Amino acid sequence: MKYLKYQTSPTIVMAFILPVFYAASAGAFVENSCQQTLVEGFYDEYARSNAQLRDHAMYAKLCSSNFQQARQTISRAQRSGADRSFGVSYGLFSQGGNGKGQSRMYSSSGSFSEDRFNQWKSAYCSKNSLADSSRAAEFLMQKIVPPSVTSAWSACMRKREGLTCWATPNMSQNEEILLNVNWAKNSSTQPQVQHSFLTRGAVSKFGDAARQILPVGYQLNIGILQIPIAKETDKAIVASLQANHEGVEHGCNVFIPGERDFALTTPFVAQ
Image (tube, rainbow, N blue to C red; front, side, top):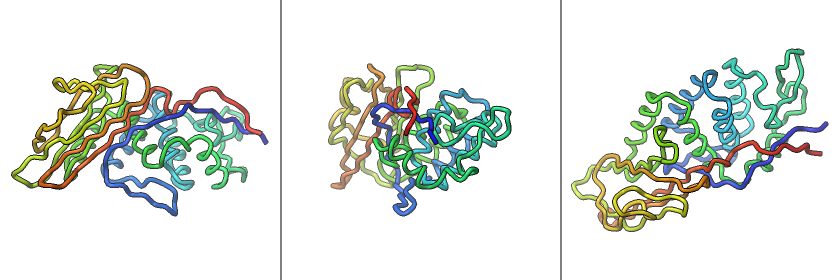
């Protein structure tokens, strides 16, 4: 049997600095409570959202999943009623079943197995780690969920102790991204920025920082600092920040997906 697949371009995806829950045996990045808020909001909006945007997010979500999680993800998408044929373009479904253009899972015919899914991941998700794929899905889901969900997710992120960074699409400015830098610690002293970095194609609009996120020596206050980042290209953005607090180093890294990351492009038929 031949299966329809799509090729993807090399990708660098966004990473939020969160506590990493990695299940080695399951081969999946496990959602924490903050992520779950965002994911549930995404499913609630699935049927009403733009098909291209939601498929973009779903692609990244599948790349961060193990077999059982992928089955659950697809089932949630199907139950939305928005697109019963979801997954045809991913090679996870086959056409047919009821003669009405709907699709059926390969598993229903016995040909969609864990091995099959792992082969798909190996072919189309190998450019990114499980954690990076999960974080890319978070960034893309923010383009779909209502502001109330994004606010709840951001509030959860701000409760994490230490230095936490994440990126938010600036919906009012298509070529801008808001880089969130949050410091949360019960201390009377402030951490000082030791180093910060932005890849080419991105410019910090915080003072004269430009290619840096924040200037060296900048003191972080408790709470969140939102820094507009201008995108000069459609490529992915990598950012990193290091700060010293009472002799202890704190760091965070952010990977923001480019327009072609996790995007379905030219199809081909696998032998």
